Image 1: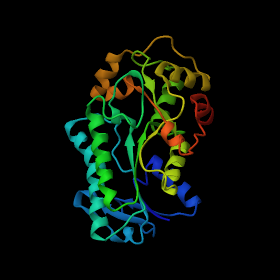
Image 2: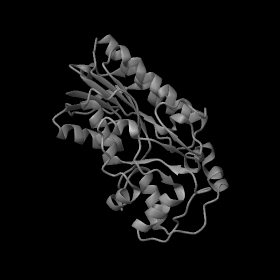
Image 3: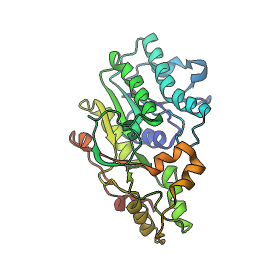
Image 4: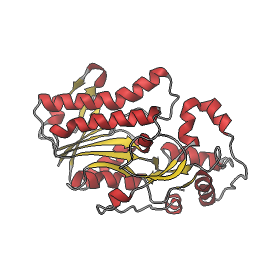
Length: 297
């Protein structure tokens, strides 16, 4: 299968590219930089340009491009968060239509923040809509709407609502591990917010599962079985790293002062279900935090 990936140089994109090639798929990467590699094609979203050769005999697009949410959300950066996801999807659709490309699947990243960022014991499923209309919920809602614009030129559209990705020496896990290594392992805020997470290997396998299986269509939560309280999450990480877990919490106000509105993704969290993707036959290798930390620490 000929698969085009945006965001291919990122944490998920690199691992996914290797996994797909290991299964004999032909993977093409869109890059903002020029490259002599035959499978890397240049695009410039700011100038609405993509190398048309990337679309020749194309079967599927996996849209992972998007600026990190882990930076302060200034008005300027909010625009970048939006354009790097939604505007780039619109550009891909424009080129597919211009070149008469018919896809077997368009698979887009999304986030579990689709439902809103809040703390509740309610278990959220893909049947739930936006519950709390905040910035990230709106971003994810528009992100997915841009993906479903491909419904008229693609046999399937899939949106992968991704939780925090745990990967060795990278991303959010690297920061969490570093705080524990410096003997600063402590719960944040109330410590009662839920932590939705997924091991990188499971996320990559989920994307492979989605691209290879025609039954996968629609929205899916990419989150491990073991959703735990923030306090228990950090305590388990400290135990795996053989470091002490501090008996007091990091006050909410310190994070709000340092991070502003972005602190909500640390201080709040609801429970998200993965039963829908599992009902189609997908299994999580790292179903609990203890399994994940044993592998990553």
